[in-house]
Image 1 (tube, rainbow, N blue to C red):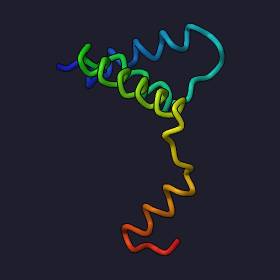
Image 2: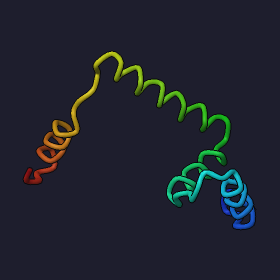
Image 3: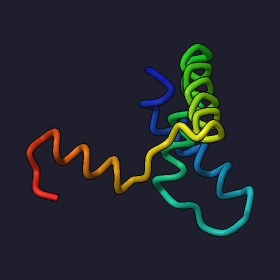
Length: 81
């Protein structure tokens, strides 16, 4: 069985997060961390490269506001906005 689909492995993972302290954990956050920790090295490298590229784009000013994106997105799909 793949580790990511192993409920016992997930329970152990969750128990370890809870034992670290710091209060309750949000389920969506712990699921994202579980998924990330179960990526292959190649997949992790791709995720990190994408994050680095996004940060470099932001630093260079190659960004759009969410409002601009939303307006363009709706216009391309014929949705009122």
